[in-house]
Image 1: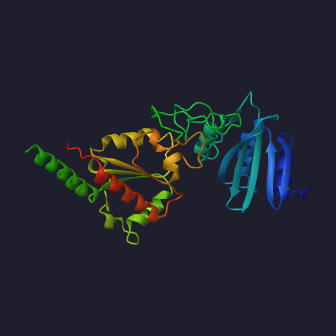
Image 2: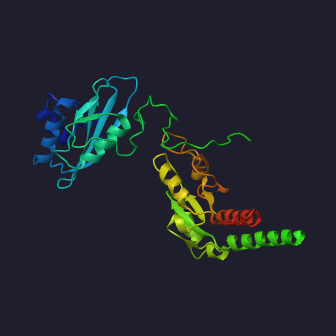
Image 3: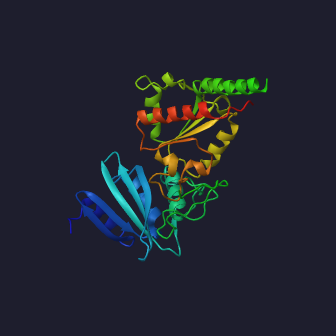
Length: 166
Length: 154
């Protein structure tokens, strides 16, 4: 177990009810929080003068099929002023695959959340325009889910017959 | 007289074939990294102009040869077919690189497993990406095909 960084300690003391667990490895800090507290924690991290995480680097997700909770939404944030980096993980149940949108905090979250929705089917509540961003509208399902059939395709036009064996 | 007429037709075919194979206007449909190799072929080092195919036309209506360079996925498939449909006859298609030819290693939810499922293809060039020499050989194969095929008069 690595030594807890000052940043993790600070957040833990501020939100004892929301922090589920933390992880730290070579200055690479991770905090797992409950999704109920996501917006509150993120707003705090962005505005508090000790953290000032003013840049949202990326949002992505992991599908841990077979374990509970199934999904994890992951936020990478960066403080340009204080030169801090932090990873926030939010566990999401399969039956209730919804998290609050953080577009009101970082507007750049808009397309990231659309990508996570497109690939994993996780709904972002109060997102201004939650629709597919990479796949086309005729596509059914969410291709990065582990239970999506490996070679399932949805052609948009009639495909020609081709000889596959010679 | 009839023998002479037959003789004349073959010569016309040959003449048209010779003219067509050395005046290929290509339309580069470039979607991926093979485009770098396409640039290399078209520029001075390998110089596709030596083969009479040095003039890319960025309108399908003015081109004879559709070069499909790179991965084609299902999202862009209708666009590729529309581009092909807009080209005037006679027209030919080269599948440039393994992704366009068979999907390559993109055997997944997004990629068309070979553009021959969308449009008919005359020459397939393998490689990831193909060397410029391979592209030129493919072009020469196509020229052979153009010269020896029946010349339709549209």
